[in-house]
Image (cartoon, rainbow, N blue to C red):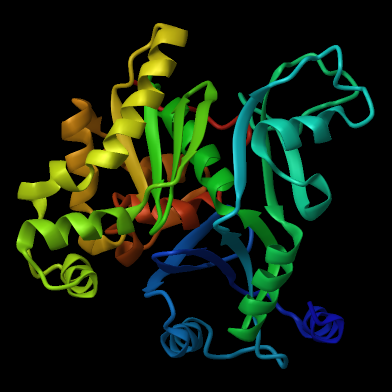
Length: 356
């Protein structure tokens, strides 16, 4: 990251408004709030398609017409690296204080080179930083991103006119928000959370008690393209790809065929979890899907014989001192916006929970 640009940005920055930006494969989600820290009002929400640099620049201009002298929009930013690490592990608490033990876990269980990753260890229950000095808990989450990708990401958002005051792994923030949401709604139902990318899917099982299971699956939306080509008799995969992402054809009728490969992997993960815990998955939510492919979430739920989690984020956000203006209020049921909302929420034990 160019130090001179950052120094100038910090020198002249002013923050009359707050900005939160969630960047994933399917788009950039931008929020402007009345302040940088809650309590505040979410004034505007904007979505920009992936790769639309000009559209993003125009969106930022509209949201903050009077820029600082540097021209940057200062924001909290969520990144979703393809190589992001978010894996649950069970530690040998007797070995935690051993030099090199945690690196050993990264290498042997997750095939990660510790010296190339920026990594942290969190408690799988409350998401707090794991205390290696006490080492009283054995269930943890390893979270991380390759160092070079963090640098590239920061330079990329700077080039787009966004100064990242804080960068978070979007998946970590999103899971934290969902766990908090389940606690707020007093839900007891184990929930399958899916982040579907083009080439891979990140699968998690969570509850109000934390993250219970995590697994990356090397199957994504692109795996459905050959099925579309075959079933519709199209001449090539490129034609199938354009049709699949265009929303001009109703694919729900062949939905079960499209997700067949992914479904087998999900059933395997769910089966293992249910045998190990004696609990049953009751609902699923897909937090990262293009709007035109939102129907996939219902197909997955139907094939797994569970319900789709219908989010009602307005009361939950209000309990976290975040109020939505009229326009953003209409998007609060869309799980694609959970990512940007998750960057806003600060968790405090004193916040009252929902009464049911």
